[in-house]
Length: 158
Picture 1 (cartoon, one colour):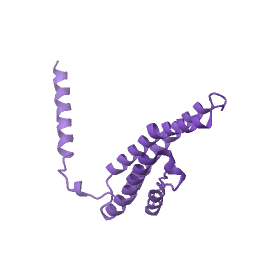
Picture 2 (cartoon, one colour):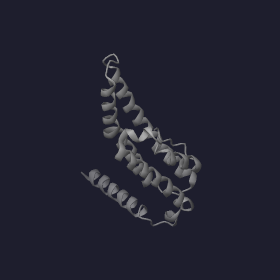
Picture 3 (cartoon, helix red, strand yellow):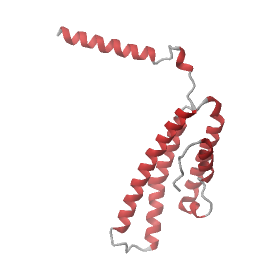
Picture 4 (cartoon, helix red, strand yellow):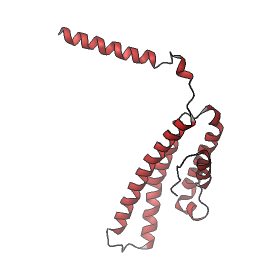
């Protein structure tokens, strides 16, 4: 019984200590994230999205091939649109949200914000026009160029 109390008090003290140190009590709370740190975190976000994207596309391809590839072009187009709207667009949105949640280096905030705004605008175009948006000009190209210029290898995948 006594040991439970001691363990409970130690846990409580540990949690309290984490709360105090996690509330900006130290001088390093204002430390700026470096470009290298931001790039590493952004690359991890993009890699996770690529993994999700590739898995969804592989599942889609398996489904199309299930009937020996004898699915009509019209049905393939319909299924492609469903995949795009219900699965791939949400993956892109999730990625954008994760990138927006990252702390950008203070010196690069405007450049990062502009890059992410390009991504958001491209997603809006894709939402409005669906898969058809990809057959004219790739709306993700601006984001891809800006990301590359910044030093990210995140690709639009579209």
